[in-house]
Image 1 (cartoon, rainbow, N blue to C red):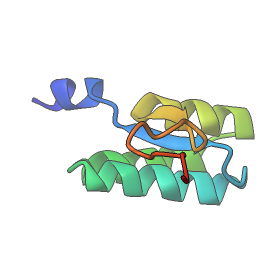
Image 2: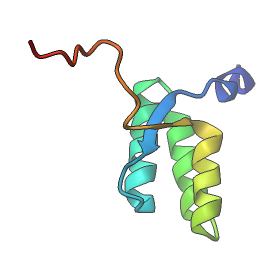
Image 3: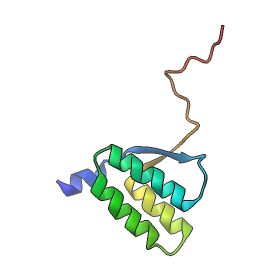
Image 4: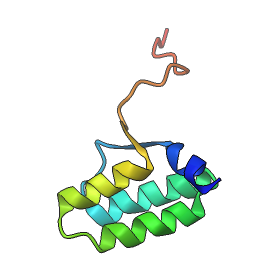
Length: 82
């Protein structure tokens, strides 16, 4: 079962966020926890903080979540005001 869970990556809107790695890993961990993946959130956080560079840390986050943009349009919002 564990291998199946690792293949399911929830969408996580990180593009457009503050690039501070602590901020990004917090958002990614919260996304994983909301999707019932608390163990993966802990594992990811440990790996990120043990990584040797910012780029490596981003790569690790990308192994756990699908990195999306915060600016992607929400189709449910009607922008016509009148």
